[in-house]
Image (cartoon, one colour):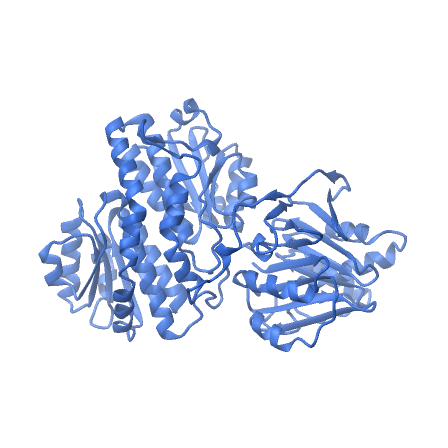
Length: 613
């Protein structure tokens, strides 16, 4: 879950690397560091803490034109300067940065200790630097490329690696297995990073490495090879993201910026490539790479996902069953492959992930494919591992999401679920007229979301009012239940205030014991079949003197007289209401975090892409 970046070009490498680290800090920020070659010696600077700590500690750096850098999210070893990357080999001939986990590092470390190598860190990564140097010593006639290849052959686990060499100051070697690595091709300069965000301000031309591949970068040229030394033909392609989308602009934090980008993100998700076919009342998702006959044969849909993506998938499963009348479920990817899942040919599987690099979801995809399952992707990051593993799927086109906490990607995932529901529903049960009604409602949503966002000052005041409380309950029913789960997750992610999401129908089955004057309840209550049931749940909470915040699209006077505070969102179809009730929950979490003075975009202990199991 670390961020890595390398640079080769005419500019001062330390400046470029520092900017790249700042753009990748959301991937890990326990410590950071950089290395470059100057006067036949590898110089390393690293520091515990955020990238700002590294920047403040840097001496006046020379004009080296090649280097690598890293921002760490700790897995092996405490958060210390010594455990920060880059790691040097024993004699200082090699420096490496590494993202991933080396499963057999204990055995490799014991072997290297037996040869007299001394370790300066507690990390698994340091063995890589020593192994490369050991191979350079053992096979002096071979090039550094061969030493890296021999080293990779010894590693068991996941890695995204960049290596720098004292003896060849204009050489970078990268390699990938289960952890992302992408080449950025600029004007007379080359980047290598775990995420295109590291170089998106300089170039949009990128090439993504596949597993068990290496890239050898020399001045103004790069070549990709397999670990068997076979050349792989690969060219950089233009990304759709722009540099402006990764800049804060007038906003104080990326999280709130990305919330306010949600209407436009939804327009892109719905409108990209003419996805809505108004004349036919259906959707077109060409990226699925399935014929209509194939889709008609599908008897069941299963989503695998983690975190916020799992809650978006739960919304999708509800839509598919309710509207398209197809059995559907959403599965926790981390549990899915360990329970010996039943995979059948009539089920269509979707892997849902913002980054496309979520380790548990990737492993679920591989397990499904091993068993003959047909798996498609719902991802945001073009060229990501899941996008390449799956033979088809749908991009959500949310644009870069820099804040660790997901906002517009969650909404984009729900949008794809709605499109999929429309497509499959029209093939089965939905009439043309009903399909057109849904399209009309979908197209109206971005404008309604902009109206909901206008309540931002009101929600800020609400956050101030409830700032003293340490525990919150979030409750919804039906399609609002996963939105309640997402709202609770947002509050605890960025404000560190404890919150739990429940089905309001399950209130009397345990959660009611938590209700009291010291625990506010946030209820999602929208017009529809479950309105009176949820209203009854609110009455049960109020009978026990629990404070209640209602997020609603209803003008029912019973509700207004019953709750302590009401946040109203515009009305839409009952099954599309989550697109609107989501916004106040995101804003409430944001303003709570702001008032508490915590780091909104980089919550403690979390990283954007969970690329290790």
